Amino acid sequence: MVGEHASYTLTVSNVGNAAATVPITITDTLPLALTYVSASGTGWDCTSTSPPKVTCTTDTGLGPFLGPPPPPSLPPITVVVSVGPGAVPSVTNEAMVASDCGDLNLQNNTDDDTVRVTFLTPAPLLSPVGLLIAVALVLGVGFHGLRTRRLE
Image (cartoon, rainbow, N blue to C red):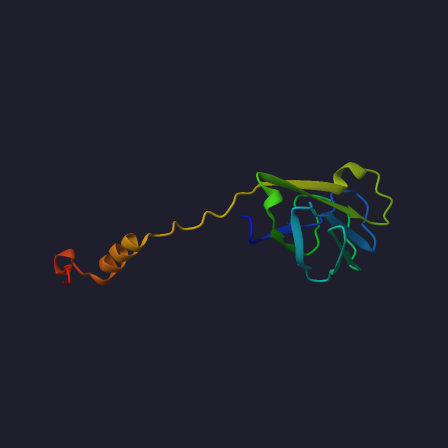
């Protein structure tokens, strides 16, 4: 929701038949409606630049996928963002991974996620009479005890 923090989890898996050599780098280009707050993951060194781009690098290699599933993967990265009003009605975040392994299939190195975003609906404000009724109900006061007198 707009005005709140949200998070993305980025996970790198190797589905290829060759090892992913170090360094392995993930680049997450944040949509302009999201403001970077933080990024972290075990074994990852994460930084942010402007325009909003998060770059995380690790010196941990990733072995080849020899089957059966699941393929080998690295610890996840959590990217925390603040959601701005420009994110309504939806926003798409895209991340890309790169390694010096001579990857023959670059098509599976990028992924995106589209999420629906809404405004936070504030609680309705009570009028003075509505507030009095709400207080009376909470305190258990009956209306039969309330009287008005006209002073002369």
